Amino acid sequence: MATNSTICKADLSVSDIDRGYYMQHALTMAQHPSETNQRLVLRLLAFAVHAGPNLTFGGGLNTDDEPDIWEKNLTGDIDVWVELGLPSEKRIRKACAQSKAVILYCYGDTGVAAWWQSIRRHVQRFKHLTIWQIPDNASQIMAEAAARNMSIQVTIQDREVTWYSAQTSIAFTCRKIF
Image (cartoon, rainbow, N blue to C red):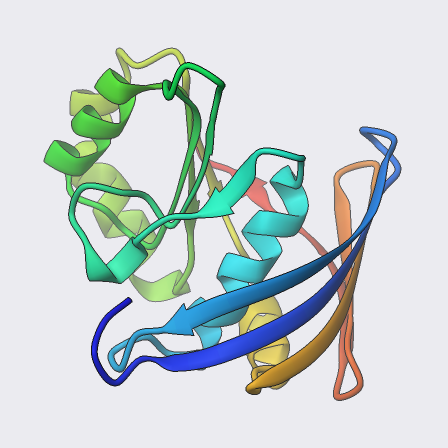
């Protein structure tokens, strides 16, 4: 946890009808001083989409060695590596070398197309890499829920995500890039 990080607590209720996963999670997150509210809630969203008994937050912005979210198996191997933003080709290569599945969630409509064009030919060989784009309007609306104490409900059905908080709600689908 970085010095001066803000500690945020989230009561996250996940109803993933597609996977048959229904669970309540009491989460504690460290918001790095450089992390925006938008990125903070997108970490919560990514956690909800991949929620499971072994899923945990990694070091994220605080370290180069860990993803934002990951799932390790009992032997310590990384089964799922979840990353947010527009990582470098080098970081994607590293993630793919260390994990069985790598999922990237891109956001910020203006930069995603240029980023994808710059790395596309270098990462297409990774068959266990999946890249999704979160609609910018959805991430901005979800950012309104960011607080030190949050209560969030996420429902997933037919790949549509519905986000509920005391401040806002929105339904959207992520666009698969790769």
